[in-house]
Image 1 (spheres, helix red, strand yellow):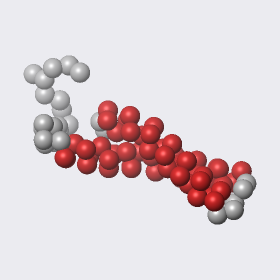
Image 2 (tube, helix red, strand yellow):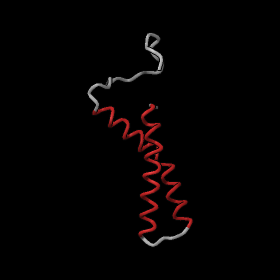
Image 3 (cartoon, helix red, strand yellow):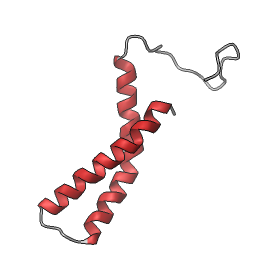
Image 4 (cartoon, one colour):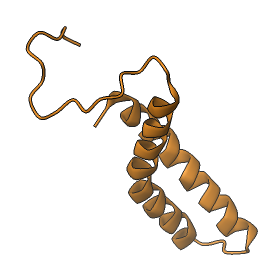
Length: 80
């Protein structure tokens, strides 16, 4: 897991929840269940969507090192 996906999780969750709420209300479903379904789907889909967006951003960035960090961090690497 990377830090970029953690920041994107908050944004993607609210975007997915808001879009689904608008879709449910536009289709005429005015009930608390519509908001609950939208919030549940947004909560469950937020992290996977944020991870996909993060991987795509990092793949398209030419200055990002394209390598697998592995299980054990490099002892010579600087602290974050």
